[in-house]
Length: 289
Image (cartoon, rainbow, N blue to C red; front, side, top):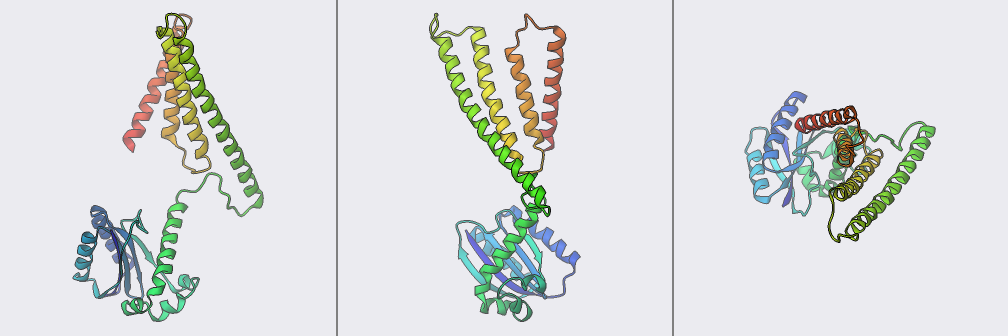
């Protein structure tokens, strides 16, 4: 796997609409070839990073070089890599300006005077900082679309304090749930041992099996609850599928351990309807994904 970095001069001035069309085409083509990277446009110059299989990257670069949108195509760097710098983008895109580069040491003067293919070749030392800046910017854009439920960064110090306090509480609940899970596992072991150690040995009756299954499901439900708790400090997206799956598992467990001799038919029917409703909900969520 290699990373190829090149710069070229645009054959004409590119409008925002033209750039969007180009970006869409790049993402479609690169996604099919498992190529990732980023495309930067400024001052009539394209700066692009291509990452992927060497033969594929070389083929794509040659096609770009011979295309109508570039002239003075110049390879700046070509190096073997073990991991991608832009693994999540079939082609990230930035249209950068001088004001942004002024914030980066050594790049403001470069942008004003040397943002050309020849300038990149003679200033290879800026490639590393530039790629780091572009990667951080793309990650920030992605993060902005998935805010945390309890962010520690907030303009109000009191809100930050409250969020921090709740986060500590959530972590403590997660810790307690881990203890519950461990104890539940021991309970499963004890239940199995208790059932097979009574005469007739190593034989389980139907009621024994139901009780054992109930212990197993209790552990699985505890694990699902732990995951739900921990999600509060990781994402603001309500994990609908996980919540529905947890509820479905919990209500199904009740069916397994029901004592049908002492339950009213209405109660059993109502529980069955809940299971059907949750099952349909889960199916629709799964289908939508």
